[in-house]
Image (cartoon, rainbow, N blue to C red; front, side, top):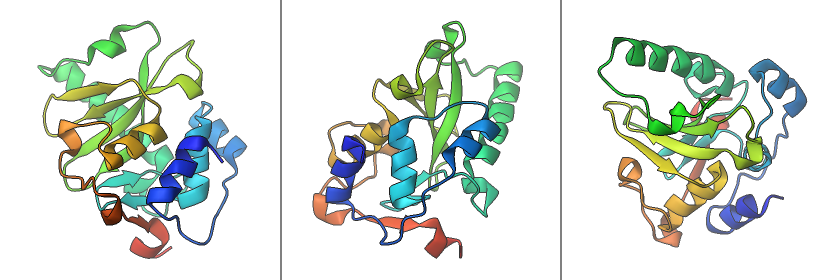
Length: 184
């Protein structure tokens, strides 16, 4: 198990049943490899929501709003239109040649998303996090991998204005899987 996922399981117990994914097929459909920590996170927890706030996108979710592949397409279209009509500026991290965004989580009730900052010559293991407020031009850059980011905001190691309402007491953390919330 990836060390960040293992550490996360110590503060937020995962569901009892694991459903490993066919990642080779998922990555072929996405057109890119994915970070090992994220694949391990989804294989361990599935899609679902941490602390009723951070909703992890999963491949092949029955609800397209929480489906990794559907959100890749939707968010690309939304951001392209937004930046085309302006005046909201693109984050400076996207100025690098070949830089891109791929969503991996939705922030419940806010319209915010967590994205991987991808790059032409950047291995998925080295993708970092860009958080977008969703209903405004605010972007936050966090130079850590996705699972480390989730773990760190839950423990209070990383502060995010976009995720400022999360409890940081280890006793208060929860995970609700999509299977229970969305009915399978």
